[in-house]
Image (cartoon, rainbow, N blue to C red; front, side, top):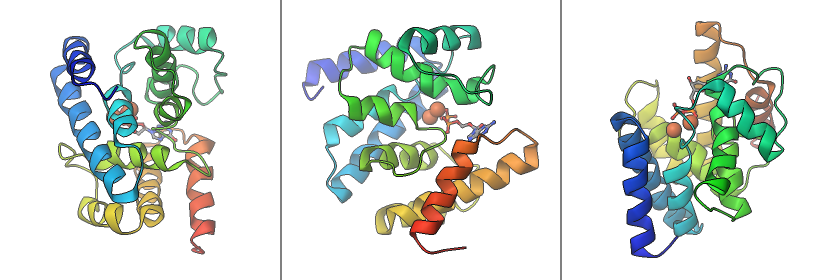
Length: 195
Ligand code: DGI
Ligand code: FE
Ligand code: FE
């Protein structure tokens, strides 16, 4: 994906396929992920591609998301079933492979886990998870200043802050918490020796 024409073509396709605000968010995630990958020594081209494609399935019907997961051999948990907020990342990884021709397993995994994270994430997974939360267009989450500072100072502390704030947000909305979100939070708290 490093080639200029391919990058531009992908942007043009996504501009057509996504809502305007989602396209701007997508560019923000790709930009932020590229910056973070320079900071931490990840592959910036992979980060850019994963950032551009992370929400590629966001506007499919939930039934189509489930169909893609089934076709792609991705099991759907009872928490994910019928829940587009959780399924779009799983369906997105299948779409990235089948429609956009992505074969790199690292990029596909970063897309797959960008909503909940997972314990023991790769550097690229962390980068996409964080970039999704803090790209320049995001402005409503609490503690964004702290998240943006931590992102470049201590990547695992940054994950903890985001996951803690996400769990807090979910508990106030009454939305069901995916155990994966909770497990990811607990994993990184334990890793960083925090309660
Ligand atoms: O797709 P984006 O809006 O850019 O961001 P995202 O993929 O992180 O999705 C965010 C949504 O996902 C947000 O509304 C919170 C929701 N979410 C994250 N973790 C969980 C969750 N929703 C449920 N029900 N359970 C979770 O554990
Ligand atoms: Fe998303
Ligand atoms: Fe996103």
